[in-house]
Structures are given as structure tokens and as C-alpha cells.
Amino acid sequence: MVWVVGTKVFSQSRLMQLIISNKQGFPSKESMEETLRQHSSVWETYSNFPDTPKQELIGFCTEKNGLKITYDPIFQKIFNPYLRSERLEAFLSAILGRTVRIIRVISREGTHLSERSSFVVMDILIQLDDSSYANVEMQKIGYNFPLARADCYASDIIMRQHAQIKAEQGISFSFQNLHKVYCIILMKKSPREFHTAKGKYIHRRISSFDTKIYTKSSGLHEDILICLGSFYSIVNNITKDSNALDAWLTFLSVTDVETIASLLEAFPFFAPIYQEITDFTKNPEELINMLSEELYIMDKNMEQMMVTKLQQEVDTVKAEKAATEERLQQVLAYAIAHGYKN
Image 1 (tube, rainbow, N blue to C red):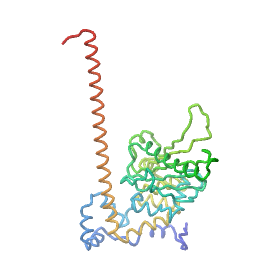
Image 2 (image 1 turned 120 degrees about the vertical axis):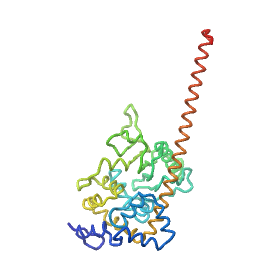
Image 3 (image 1 turned 180 degrees about the vertical axis):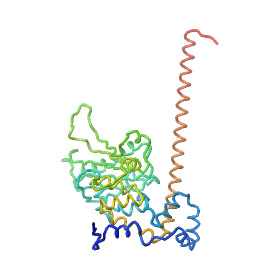
Image 4 (image 1 turned 30 degrees about the horizontal axis):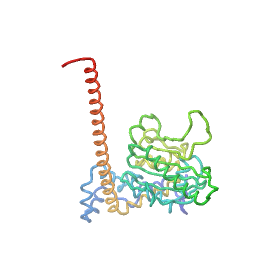
């Protein structure tokens, strides 16, 4: 098999050498560390890394494994809607099951729900060629209440377009002219509730009536939540018979060379993307800084989660105490009413 990448033709083995075994890498851990020692501040940062990210960095720089696509700078470089709209279009087409084209990227600045959390890698609002909207978000750790958050985001987007369309149409405005909003949330680590759906990694929510009326309409809001952690525990063998969505989710989930090789053989579309990723080995100092910031964000995430968990535990104890006191008052009232004495 031969693949065409740009204007060059590569055999499978040659392409794999270029992409997986990047010649910009280091022959050994020792040679990589020798380079880092030449920069005292970088070496100090690297020396303080926990073992897991340190081994991941060494493996990537010495051509033994890939790099996590879900790291902030990697993910944003690959899915930049201004520079690489065709990739986001291909990804969304696989999720929605139809070919889509992005007609504009919409700024979230100035909206009531504009936020930038350390949990969020990417949060982008776009309009598609059928005039529907897609809010695409990548979360490091799934929020404890993803449905409420998705509802708020969708409501915000619906009201924004309501105000715009009503201003344009005036007295001729009709609610039928409002367009659907898709909230697409990818989670590296999902809340516990998602793990109760055995064998499922994609969760779709639409509006419907229990009486089966309006079965051809799902309202203006649809949620699609994808659990990457669950995905790879279920689908861990990518082949030419796999669908495009599973290929994209594999791309987002794996770092081992064997699976990357299988993905490239089945879906050569990813070859130029992996070539871009290998550019990061040209500057290990940049990788050190990137991982350092990632670890800082992870620490903040854990801190926030611990605070949230402790607050939930406090609220639970308060509720249990209040319930116990109420029950005690009921027992005392009953005893007094029936003449019981100490």
C-alpha cells in the first residue's frame, strides 16, 4: 500500500518511520536528559515531574509512544477552527451522522455564560451550513452536573439567536425560524453515573413526550456526551471496517505505537496530523513547559474537586442532622401526646 501525503508518496513502512519513529527524536533517555541539562530552569522543572508524565515525555522523545492529543496545546492546534476547519467538520460529521460544513465561528465573549475553567480544554461555538449551532467542548474531568450545564449553555445560545432573529424579522418573527443547538461534550474522565451504562460510551439526549406526540421533532436542543475513557475500554481494535467516529475517538484516546499504526493503516487521513504532532519533539523544552502547565492545571482540578466533595459531605451531614432532629421532635411530640414520662 502507498499513501499520498501532500505531494509525496510513501510506502506504509516509510510513512510509519516518518510519523511514529520521528527522526527528530532522541536515541535514548540519556541523550534527551543531556540536552535538558543545558537549560537549568527546564532541567529543574523536569526533575520535579511525577514519574508518570516524566515517563510519557521520555517515551515520546525517544519514539516509544505518542503524545496525548487531549493536552491543551495539541488539541487546540489540531482542531483550530480558523486554520483547520476541515478536521472539525470531519469530526462533527462523524458524530452527527451527516456531512456538515462550518460557516462561521461565534465568539463567546460578552455572553452571560462565558467562562474558562481549568477543567475545559476547548469550548467553541460554531454555526453549520444548515444554520444549526454546535457547542463543542472538551473536558479534562467531567463536571458533576453535566446535564444542568448543557441546558444552561443551550438556553444561552437559543436566546442569543432568538434576540438576533427577532430583531431582523420584527413583527413577522416566528419561533419556527429558530435553529437547533447541539451540545457536544467530550470527557477524558466522566462522572460515575456514566459508568452505570455498561458497554456505552456515547450518550445522546433529546426532548420527547411520553404520549408519543411530535415524534418527528426533538425540540431545539440535543446533547451528545462522549466518554473517551469508556470508549477505549470497549473499542480497542481499530480496523478498516471501523466507522469514522470510532476512528476519531481512537485518535483522541491512544498513545501506544501499535494502535496508532493500526489507525493509520485503516484511516490514512490521520497521517498528516500525526506528522504535525511529531514537530513537538524538535523542542523538548517546549514540551517540558507544556507538561508543567498541565500538571499545574491537574493540581487545581484536584483542589477544586476536593473542595466540592467536602462541601457535598458537609451538606449531607447537615441534611442528616436536620432529618434526625426533626424525627426526634416527632418522637417527643408523640410521647407527650400519649402521656409517656421519663
